Length: 250
Image 1 (cartoon, helix red, strand yellow):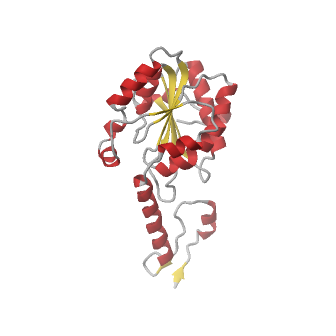
Image 2 (spheres, rainbow, N blue to C red):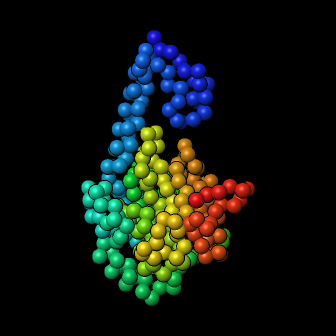
Image 3 (cartoon, rainbow, N blue to C red):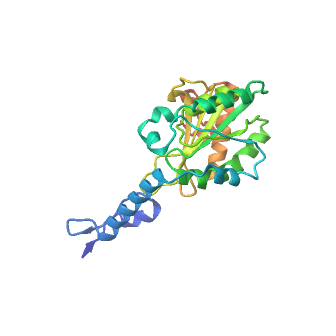
């Protein structure tokens, strides 16, 4: 016989694992199986292959050129063992991007797209987020560089890409580390003055972007606000907050 938790009435209001109940001194079988399923989905998300050309096709309605580049990680196993290699472009990609942007006009913002730790998040969340986000940039007159798709990238790769593109700021959108119940969560990281060697204290993060978390249209408004303020005030990171309505976003 299962004893129901007194907090059971709170459970419909949160995805957190509360009010699970008991079966004697143990969890109910259904809860054990649900936990095992969530753990399996999180592991699968980390190892799911990324399909950059599929993402590029999904972005076709967006009127921006797309660069496809590689990180220095090379393959998934190396990427998971060597985070440092995911923070840099491969030598070939670095040389090609440098040549392509050597005589470019310069941009306000470079945007990097990657699977990160969840290809599922990249495939599901990047297209709808950009559909909401890019028109907001257009209304603000922000000059956006060609989109960069870089598989197996870490957050700091935005520094090298942004620096090579001559962009004033850089934004990377990539899959976050999957949680139990959130294998498809996307993160957005902004930095002003992208250059190799920046620390995370200079970045702003908008996380848990997915329909069950922070909806794409709301995330787009937050990101747009931060980008606009970053370019106007020439700062990012701990010195920049979302001050709309007294909220803080770091």
